[in-house]
Length: 489
Image 1: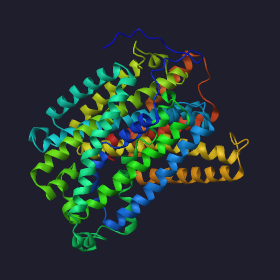
Image 2: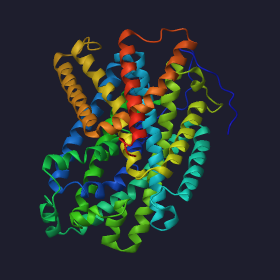
Image 3: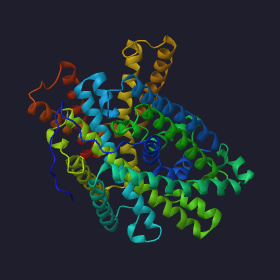
C-alpha cells in the first residue's frame, strides 16, 4: 500500500482532483455500477414470482420509477451545479446536516452490503463447478472472498482515476456475454412455451397479478442500484452537464438489457423450470439452450461482471465517506488521502466492513438473498431524500429563477413521481429490513456526534433530536427482534 502522506481537508482547502472524466467514462461508471450480479439472477427471481405479463408490468413500473429518479439526478445536477457527491449532499442541502449524514451512511452501508453480496455470488457461481464453495457461504468461500477484497483494495489505493479506467474496460467485456445470451435465446424462441408463460396460471398459484408484481420489486430495485454513479463522481466530470447525460444514458442502456434478459428466458423454458434454476440462473437457462459450454461462457461473464461492479461500488463507497469528512459532516480522519489522492482511510474502513459482513455469511440461512435485500433497503434512504429534495425545490421555486413555469412544473411532477415511487419501495421492502437498517444507522450516529464535537458545532436541532430518537428506538427494537428470533436472518 502506498504511504499515507495525506492531509485532512477542511472546508476551504483545495481537493486534490485526478484527471477529469469524459461522458463515455461517466456513462461506463453508471452502467458498470448497475450491471453486476443482479442481471445474472433475473430469470429465476422473476420465475418464482410471475409470468410474462407480470414481468412486463413490473419492468414498466420499475422503469418509470427509476427513470424519474434518473431525471431527478439530471435535474439536480443542472439546478444545483455547486453540489458535488450528489447522493449525500442533496439530503443535507434539503433537510439538514443530520439527514445528510444518514443519507451518506445509508448509501455507504448499502455499498458494503452490495459488495459482500458480490463475493457471495462469485463463490456461489464457483460452487457449480467446485462443491466446496457451496452457495457462497462456506469457509472456503470466505477465504476466497477475503483475498479478493484486499486485492481490490490495493488496486484502488493506487488511484481512483486508474480504477475508473479499468472499470470502463471491464464494462465492455461483461456486456458481451449478456448480449450473446439475449440473441441466442431469441433465435431459439419457442412460441408455445412463450404463450404458456404469459400468465403462468397453468403451473400453479403465483397469487394475484398485484402480488406477483410486488414480489419482483426488490430485485428490480437492486439491479438498478448505481443509477446515481455519475452524480457521485460529479467532481471528476470534464463538463457538469455530462453528469445528467451519463445518468440517463446509462439507465436506458441497462433497462433495455434487463428487460430483454427476463423476456428471452420465458421464450425457452417454462416458468417452473426457470424458477427451479440454480443461481446464477442465467447460467442454467443458457446451458439448457446451447449445452455444457454455455455454463462456462456465462460463468466467465458472471465473474468479470461482478468484479467490475465491485470495483465501481467500492470507489463510490470510499467517495461517500470522504466527501462528508471533507465537508465536516464525518469525523476528520475519514477525509485523509494517500499520495495518489485516494481517500485511503475511507477505503480501509469500507474494506474492513465488507470483510466483517462476509464473516457473518457463515451463520446466515440464505446469505445471497439476505445481502441483496439489505443492500436494496439501505439504498432507499438516499434515493428517497434526493427525490424529496428535488420535489422541495420545485414546490418552493428555489433555483428556478429565470426558468419557465412549464419547465418548473415538469420537473416538479418528475420529482413527485420519484418520491412516491421510493416511498412505495419502502413498503415493499417490509418491516424486517427497515428495522435492520435502523440497527446500522443508530450506532453510526456516534460518528455524527464525534464530527460535530471535534468542530465545536451544535449537535442536533429539535427536529433532529426527534429523528435521532426514532432511529435509535427502531434500532433497539431491531436488536431485540434479532435476539428473540422475531427477525430471522
